[in-house]
Length: 243
Image (tube, rainbow, N blue to C red):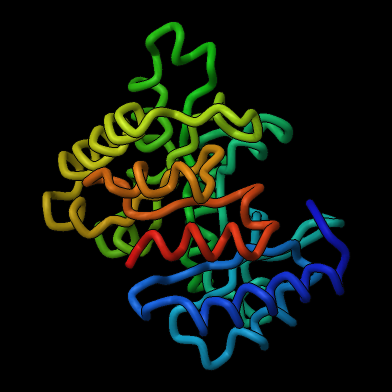
């Protein structure tokens, strides 16, 4: 929840221009903006095969008397392709449960949106050594009800909640350990091929300095970038790690 309408457009314009000039063609960026900019960003992104637009949230109902909410159909109608579901801040501040997020995932897929499904543990859960159980329950209760075809449309994003906005980053070893665990759980449910092809992102105070070490890990396929995405130079420098 940052920047006004024009400021957001300026940032996005900077990012896509720098992306065009500096990216190698192998990278893909998905920009998930506030709702007010979605249509304009989708128009600006036209013609860029490796830049897509997504929303930061969607309601679980197709439509109805839910004043202030945004439906998956509305998001799709403005040209967005992705939607973030289950971000740690939505879970923490708005009480979004795994059951609710399963319903949101179903509705997003029904409306041809690709969910970026977020999972992750709090500091208390990690200190209690419950982090693997938490991650597994978020997967099982949130998305493992899907059939293979629908699950293959998902992007999974691991967020160590204790490393979001704190300046503390999970070590590359800690991040890889969880990403490998996630892939093993996916393989156990859907098979090795789907597990290998599932994109798993790391999100937790990622920046240009720590990105190379994090993204060198075998099971980390990309980043869910928060604060660093508000600076076009920082964001592009993170993108360029994937050369």
